[in-house]
Image 1 (cartoon, rainbow over the protein chains, first blue to last red):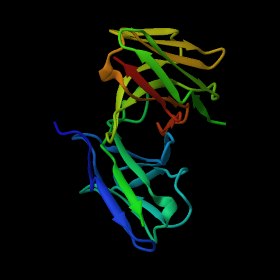
Image 2: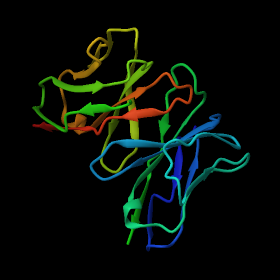
Image 3: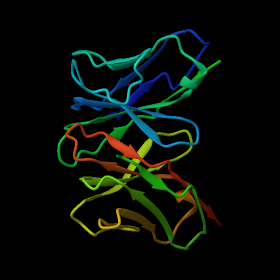
Length: 115
Length: 112
């Protein structure tokens, strides 16, 4: 049973370009969380999705950021018109349910560098 | 509000015990977790404790929870060089969304 997959592992973009980060949850998991880790900081919650639904986007910046988790395929975190401050590690986690104890299994992360 | 604080750095000698501390502010936390992050890798769940428990032991790991003081600690017995990593505590609040609030991480350095 493969773990949470994220790709690419490293992504370099120039200011103004778009970044697309992909996350494939563990088999059988229908809950996906995205977190951002700025240098020397802990992880900050961004968004929580279930298949075809955004459940909690309270941590998403109001502009340029969007996320989806379609019925088929991976979850996508999209950052439009990237700026240097978007440089960070973006982690995806998946779980099998959201209530009670739910272990969130983390992917290896995508490290975004904006030049 | 939701806030989790940790000391940033701890250095111990191999074979000693390590104690990593964490404080949190949300009294409605349901579960508290300890994650380990090795360089360039994702987070690995080490252990967790439900908020109505005071202590949990799992092999070399002991978690202590003082709910009154909102203080959580992780003790690693017989610390090994392979334990060198960043340790994050995280809380899950009473919100049904399951999102985790993380501390900023404690870097554990184990000297041979």
